View 1: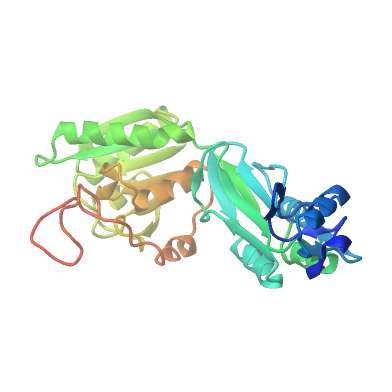
View 2: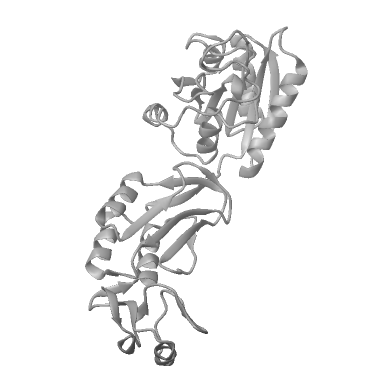
Length: 341
């Protein structure tokens, strides 16, 4: 691609690099310059124009952006027609955004002329939400450079995993210090969290804060309620793998896969399983509608994504979230007592 000033009399058929206004004539950037406009600009005394001309093998900005965007586009996404060197990708349905981080990094490393940007990986998205954009910086890019960018990423590096686990069972444990209206509020907030995913609470049990009681209730919401995801809200926080909630999961013939996560609020989350049904031991902050680590795990599991220990321990960077209204105790210290993590 050639870029630079040319005599206005030689500009017909080239692409204007910048918008120019002279007298009553306006020539917008990125447009092919027609001969009649050249004549008007000459009449207005314009001598030179900064223009762009494509060389053999160059690919125009719109075509280049669309080709790369479609290379990256996977299931659950659609591309809109490109404009000004940009092609945007949108979610076709609600779900969790899947991003091949290494692929996007590799594309952006090919050449400064080519960029790709996305929302954060595993972010919940809704139908019609823009999730990624490919932007070609100049007005054209060499075909060989574009080919390298396309080759740098595997096909379908981006996608949206639809929500699949839509039947949620809930177990809440009781202690004298926990009011029934607190449990009622927790269930209401959970229902609001589930609604964007099209999920709902199909079974609910309230039992004593006891491992055997938890085991029986968990079996009931999964076996009788036919839940495909279970959540346990403890009357007190999970402090150890031998505590009531993890012991109850194991007593129900389940297993504890991981306890704790480097997300605050949300540190005291437990991830377990019973017969192929994921079980979340919810941290206390899950009773609040504010975003916390519970949301991060909930949406992945609703989308039936496998969550490994490595996925959890990788959440530390960016895992320090805003203070929440329901947690008056600041992390820096203080004597107030808030919800458990």
